[in-house]
Length: 246
Ligand code: NAP
Image 1 (tube, protein in one colour):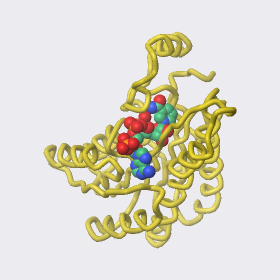
Image 2 (cartoon, protein in one colour; image 1 turned 180 degrees about the vertical axis):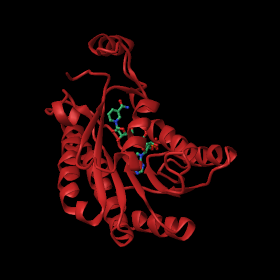
Image 3 (cartoon, helix red, strand yellow; image 1 turned 120 degrees about the horizontal axis):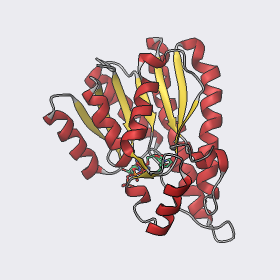
């Protein structure tokens, strides 16, 4: 097993990519903290993990609330004794053309996607420094590298996460903590479930692999970066997009 006895916090683990990651990590031997605002989804993931014989607990977490991130870390330490992996996967979209985007849409997306990751990193980093090791993975997007019409707020957060990843890779490397980012392309999850079939077809055509991504595709990228197999990978941005942006 690739994550035997490791403890992983996964935010946004009640749905989509985070859900698939929690299940995969548990299968690979990790104890998982399923952290999400979505209590129903999160609890379902925990019971599925337990049914398969691994250990997990649900942490009700709104990543924008710093005190909740701190509490989650305390609870994880009480339950599992250490924290090896943090995946800042929670994210939202609130799209609009820049002429129409409200201040609220801007603030909401910045707060969840960017500040939320910062909150969780600050809550966990002292623990990892004391341990002398840890792996942090931030969920960016190809939109953070190339932009996308209607996503000024979202693209800014994902580009911001890439900047944070590289900075923290420099800052924390000497403490034994690796920080990397994954940049998914178009992945079929509840987040993308309202996209019209015409656009989906266009995306398929533009992708050299001629298909859209599945949550599992991203989960396996997280798995590699979280595992000891990636012990010399730090500050990287791994695109998981079927070649869409080449
Ligand atoms: P998803 O299915 O919507 O899952 C996101 C999860 O995060 C949901 O359970 C959501 O809860 C939760 N969440 C929302 N706000 C939160 C908060 N404040 N605190 C804690 N949890 C919160 O989306 P996904 O497609 O799996 O996306 C996962 C990550 O991949 C996101 O960061 C996204 O930006 C990134 N990504 C996705 C794609 C794609 O094509 N799907 C592409 C590039 C990057 P609710 O359901 O209650 O809102």
